[in-house]
Image (cartoon, rainbow, N blue to C red; front, side, top):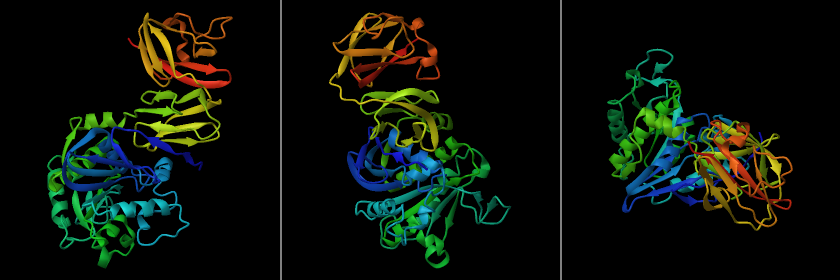
Length: 430
């Protein structure tokens, strides 16, 4: 598997640190209070476990207390949509070899878990089947992990929020009152790890409680195929826990299945090398002749799960495990001193920086600059080398060259000699 280029993530939330293999966000309230650590993506084939914290980062504001969010603990496995590219990361918390590819991730999250300000930890998963205390069949049984709140022991003595069984049962009671289907019932599964489950002794949550940090795992069922529904259950569980912990928050949407589905499919945008922006909602499945550097391209996503993977064909753009587009590169140096351009949009003059998207209804005209060549992709006129100073009507642009499937966004590229300067997106606003 090709190694993905590191994508910097840019959201309205504060990145707590930037030197970890995964991203860490801090959602901090104006009032001090309890600190909750939410960990997602330890298993790369459990999308409920990583899309949920991404929505938490993008659409929640904390009023009291603090929520620290790791949406992508195992980024390589998320990209590959495999439980663990380097075997199961959640079995490496008791011991791990220095040459294990997961070593840096595991050591970094251990340090965060044991941080003195962290009061409670949850680890997000999707598990097989539907947990039941008594055997019903191969899907509904005591060995299933799906639809459970998993604790390693009932209590953690003399520690704030150490009554894990009581906390898990409070969340269970609340969630079971608002299920989408009756058979989606949640249960509390106590693995009694210290005395009964030697394998579980290698897990993240057991590592946490051995360091006197209350923790539990939230497992929605892999048998629930609708990602929005699993994410709805995960978010509802986290909200119930935050209420118990005294963490006050504001959500930027009504919590229902339709809205969660809409937020999951809001992929945001990616800024490339500080001079190109691509809106990822509705983008074409591949973009030809994308201006890129020969190496060290910087991809700055607004979505916490955004990542770029270099392949023989170019760069695959991902949100979580979902491949959004393929950029087929056109390689240029980018030593350019042009910083902004002037464009007439329906005869109204605006100044724009590279990477911006501008709306127009009927036509546009890009004003010329000395030594700068303009290329409007999808427009051509015989004998014209640079397409500045021309009034270009929307009917004159070949819709096959749009950036989006709706055929409404087109790119104007700017060059200085052999150097690529940047791109402006021109959006036909109906």
